[in-house]
Length: 220
Length: 300
Image (tube, rainbow over all chains, first blue to last red; front, side):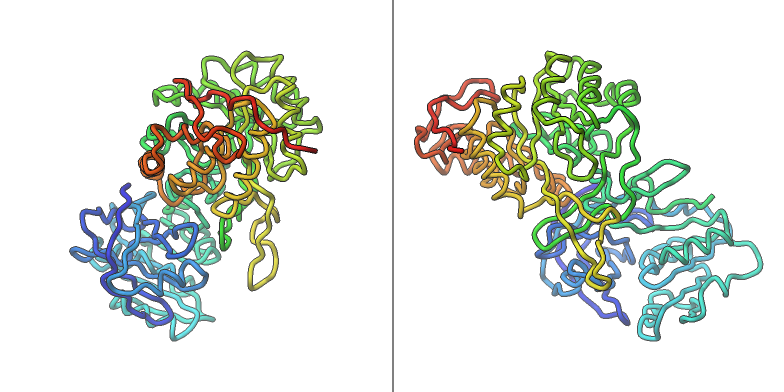
């Protein structure tokens, strides 16, 4: 884990979301599903964002401007600088035979980088509106559904290694349908490196910190 | 002279950060294991953050058997934060501890039910149970924190940790319901700094005990201000969440801030905020020296 000050390369609207592209410098992009804590200008705490794209020389983060921190991040301009800390947490296990990526809403954020590392496997994406669904352009070839249709309705019959990220109800439903799915969860966290205990979730009957034990957890 | 505030760093997960401090303060240990409070447990506010972790910890036995031996490998002085739900519980944990730098009694967690006894009664019970240095961590919500400081001093405390978080509430802007699952949480971060300064200032004038100042420290100047108010050590809390490199940065800034004021050492600023004190007080090699005695007592 390294904390460095990085220059914003571009800030691009992607449907209802914003793609924040940052100079990578010497930072390791990590494994898909890992995340960075991004300094949110004017805010007390940084915000956890998974790596969306790791093109040469860049790190890109897909951000949904839903609160003061994410709005501050989306208001950054090229040339601005921000502190980034990472990569943090545990990413997806890439040793899978027949991957299927499943994403819901802003939960598609880690999937483009994951898709790149896995050689563009099939993907199912669900969104709440046409505007949000424009973000599917980040995953060419993905099958897309819009509420009230949910991704769980589109799951193929044959068995796949499901790697998913999305809202909690989607992950809970997936876990029921695909017990061995790898799921990337989300929780409010102050630090991202195990210091604050804010992101604890119950796992195997014990509370674990999602930032250290996760964010990718095998369902089981 | 730079510590972490209890509950703001896990030395086993981030050992390099812990080693950048002069001493490591553990998360509060209670006799029984605690999962802590349900999620959501943290919320950012405009000038700080709320936490409602609820003293999640492995419990005394597992701490002593598993965690403490691994913490010793850090090679840093260890302060053990001790909590409980009665004076006897605090005292039992104190009695079980040996060979650590200090015990910090968490007498003021805003996120769990309090022990029925007064802070002074808990300190007295712990004093009878251990000869280790006992630091009393007090709440800034006390109506007269100087009075609380006098009471724990009389009960045998060796020092004060000032301050714990203040109880606060955040509402979700959409639902207008509490953001935290438990409702309220402990408020920390930049907004707490003036509260911490006032508490350190009042207690330094009221008691002879060394004080670890904490609350909203983000810079070397913040640390120097706490020292000027009467602290002889400074702890970092919320800033560690956003900047794990804060200890080294703040240490360098503190040295520079002192030098810019022609002070040979940051602790030479100690007590400078108290007008009747000399601007420079003699400093022993012991960073935990006491504030000299000829100070005005706070009037009731």
